[in-house]
Amino acid sequence: MNDPALIQQLLTDLQGSDHAKARYAAFRLSQLDDARATRGLLDALRHSDSEKRVMVVQTLGEVGGTAFVPALVECLHDRARTVRRATVRALGKLGGKEALSGLIGTLLGDENSYVRWESAKALGTMDDHQAVPALLEALSADSNSYVRYAAAEAIGLLREPSGVDGLEYALLNDENDFVRYAAATALGNIGDLSVTPALISMLNYPNTHVWHAVAEAIWSFDEQAMPYVLDALVDESPVLRRAALKALLWLSVEYDEADVEDAQELPWYAMWGWWN
Image (cartoon, rainbow, N blue to C red; front, top):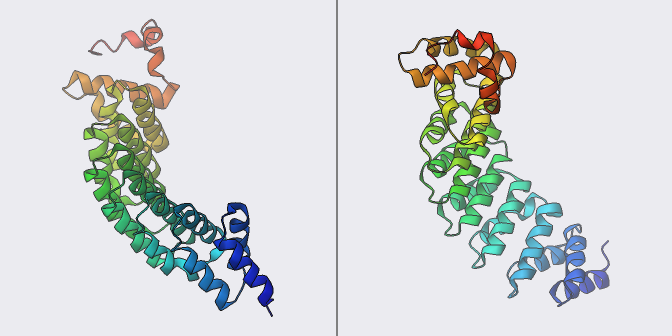
């Protein structure tokens, strides 16, 4: 049986101004199978101090268990963005259908870009492919590049084939290079060979980080990418032929864009007279 005096003291500490004591009290209370402890934690989620609400949310996300998910979902509508961000992280750890639904709503509807960013990251860790349509919507439509980056990364973590078209579009068209980088990495994780032509075409892209992410994605396909590379090598476009040669070199001799000037001095390089 739980000690009533101990529970009362923990509840008092939870509501007090000492945040260290309050955090410890929240942890202890979350471990007790007691209606008073549960009620005290739920009351603390409505505390006037947003820092106190954040602390309780964080504790419940770490050790509170799925029983607290419904109350945490309500916190997604908290007036303080710091509370909403903490709640998103907590729900990502706890998981479950109700958490998934809440996170999807927050990804697509929260006014704060940091909260939406955290939502995309959380959805990528939940291993539930039902999140992919919402992540694709965020990838294509969110005004904030960090959110789009996190959405692309999450789709890649989920390795969901239905995300390939949206990722390919982002790779080729997004205005932000970090989003393009995340899209290339995600496409490599998913491993759908149909995107190889798009990846090859991006080997001429000037941003080094994007270029290397694309090259690594092609490399991950290994020999299966070679038919696409060979087709591109005889394409009528010299730009695409140039990209295809880079892909061929990358697959065969670990070519690096930074070494292109040195490569031009090698005898085997000269036979590609139609490089440009």
